Amino acid sequence: MRDIFKEEYARDWKNDVNTVWILTKQHLPRLLAAIVCSILLSSINGSIAWFVKPSVDNLVLLKNKSFLVFLPVGILLLFSLKGFFSFANNFLMSSIGAKIVKSLRKQFFEKMLFLPFSFYARESSGSVISRVMNDVGILESLIANTTKNFFVYSTTVFALGFVALYRNLNLALLSFAIIPLIALVSGRLGRRMKRTSSRTRMLISNVTHIIHEAIAGIRVIKSFTLEKEMSRRNDHSISEHYRNVMREVRINEFTGMFIDIIAGTGIAVLTWYGFYLIVHDRLSLGEFLSFVVAVMMMYDPLKKLSRVNNDFQMIRASLHRIKEIFLAPEEKEGEVEKKELAGDIVFQNVSFQYPDHKDSALEGIDLKIRPGETIAIVGYSGAGKSTLTDLILGFWNDYTGTITIDGTDLKDYSLRNLRSHIGVVSQDIILFDDTVRNNILFGKPSSTNEETIEAAKAAYAHEFIMNMPNGYDTPIGERGVKLSGGQKQRISLARAIIKNPKILILDEATSSLDTDSENKIQKALEGIMPGRTTIIIAHRLSTIQKADRIVVMDRGEIIQQGSHEELFEKGGVYRELYAMQFGLTSSQQPQ
Ligand SMILES: Nc1ncnc2c1ncn2[C@@H]1O[C@H](COP(=O)(O)OP(=O)(O)OP(=O)(O)O)[C@@H](O)[C@H]1O
Ligand SMILES: [Mg+2]
Image 1 (spheres, rainbow, N blue to C red):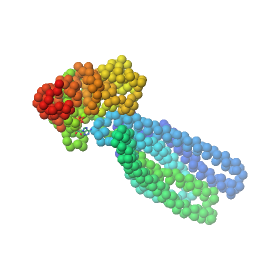
Image 2: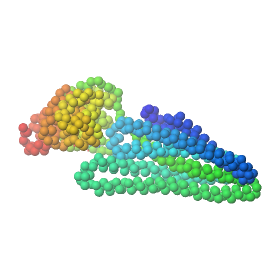
Image 3: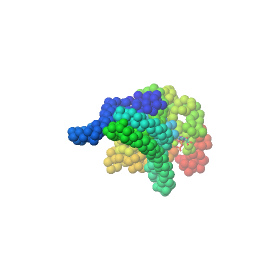
Image 4: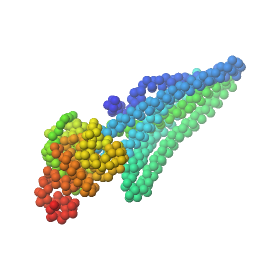
């Protein structure tokens, strides 16, 4: 479903009408039923105008009493039918709108999950959220209303136009002369509408972004008393949005006003000419009134039809913002899938630069990690340690040089397969708004209860989990707000362990843990490292010393490698880091 959608989007996007058509045609039976209702509705409208002549002529001119019965019954019947078809038509079209939105939101979310990091480096979360909520929402009401209006009103205008023409050709032609004028006004304003509307959409995404950031950063806002500053930013962005919305309102209402004026002029001329014909006995009162009713009834649909253009421009603005997401390239990957990995990782002359950054984050990295080896990466903040491990996970693929895993180029792997062999505890620990158990299960959803407990025990998390009010079923809140830093780390360690991965990447959080937590995490690590290739971005003395090898990074390069003793002996960055961290003078050897 998503593939069809994507291909068609890519091919037909240039033509926005076609896109709306592609979206609506998936609900063809409903659409056809709605069109039938529209045609019936417009025929009823036509009949109402049509029957004015026989009614007026029979009642007023001929004083035909039987019409006293016909007339109210006929009116009741026509209006009941009109009500029914109008209901059916609205219902069908709204349901099409709602269905389109449902499937767009579903596909949008799936697409979002497959977008690479480079996408998220460019787009703010607010902009993405606002596209899926606001822009898709706009499509819901507009597609339903605009297409409905278009069908109903154009066929109604057609039916009424026929009645008008039939009643008096000259009068009708005169009245139709104003249509091109209306089209001209609405066309000009429609173009302005599209520009304004895309800007409004962009501005609302700023608003969303600020709200999102405020919620995510509420701790910082409170502790740094940034309430005023954040409110100021918010005020600024909602005011800007407000101004643009008002611009939209003005354009829309101007369209309406101009059309009223043009129509008023037309009506004045027509009334004069109609009565002129009646006075000269060239038109019956019934014919004239039937004509007037037809033209009056055309007025509202015409006015709404002129807005269809504005609406369509709004749809286009939203469609374009949604399109940008759907057409964004997904993560590139190969097809190699391996059931088992040994965990042999080789970097050959790898350099990498973040998009829009001029300095390289990694420069000429050569590194061989043997299966089962534990290496510790150390270096100043910003040295490129996390970046190095992100490359192993295939998060960024526009690096130069080669990375192979078990002899196969990383770019040839299927990303899902590759990532299924890697367990990660990232520096910024992300837990989901769910229970402890489910957060561990995210590592491997098919695990049994015993496996979950085992993983938690291996991560030294079981004990504190059992002390929580509902044990494993305790909800931990958004991003694990209900847990301490060390507890979060241990749960995310359990989540990595339950996967039983061949490659384990641990990016230690720099926040210092108390000795007890540190000991527990240390013990956990010792228990799970054997048999796996482990890369630890280490800050702690204990972890560094347990590693088979220490890799020292500085400004994107590997500058030293070796055992703790060797590196300490040599001096340089390693000894500096060491001294800084453990409060030793640079010549002191730790115990
Ligand atoms: N998503 C990103 N987009 C752009 N630049 C980034 C991104 N992540 C990191 N960088 C830059 O790349 C460089 C290396 O960052 P990296 O996160 O790898 O450092 P690190 O060694 O892990 O540091 P720390 O010890 O503080 O975690 C830094 O200069 C940083 O500014
Ligand atoms: Mg880091």
